[in-house]
Image (cartoon, rainbow, N blue to C red; front, side):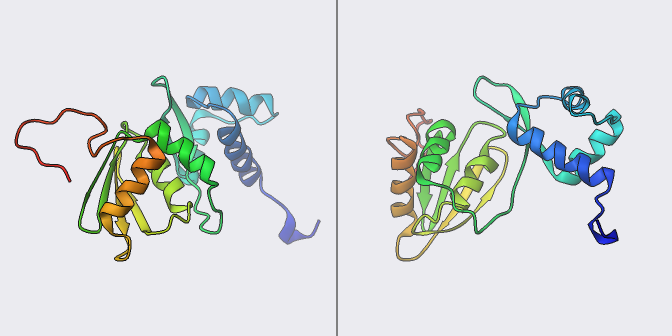
Amino acid sequence: MGVGEVMSSKQQRQQMVTRLIAHDNVSSQPHLQELLKEQGIEATQATISRDLEELGAVKIRIAGGDSIYAIAEYAPARVAPSDQLRRVMAEWVAEVTSSGNLVVVRTPPGCAHVVASALDRSGLVGLLGTVAGDDTIMCVATEEVGGTGLAEQLRSLSGVTDATGGIPRKKGTAHV
């Protein structure tokens, strides 16, 4: 190996952290520390904490209410298969509403970025892009499709049958 090809132990450790998070439901730093140890990598909790921060790892809530670490990937060339998008939408989308060329998608707390990432990678006709918060996603529709058309597509993908996902609203609260 040439000098430029030598990988630091930090790089190796962070690659292993990324692999472990991608393949296991890593629920805590001590859990990750144990998984690393099983791979022959000793790391302190402080080191693991810094690695998670540098890798952009976040805690997300999964079915059943447990929280696990996830690392967001920015891979615009990687298209999410339609069955993956349908699965993510069916599992995490609770409500879809629209106004003008905007669509608001509601999810359980901590899940919006997972749905937004799948939507961004979907290549869905009529979707320009998304912005995700904790439990809300704002989707921008093309002028040709419009917010109403995009909302219908998203409802169809998610199985949500109406704008509120069946959630009763207070009297006088309008939803498109």
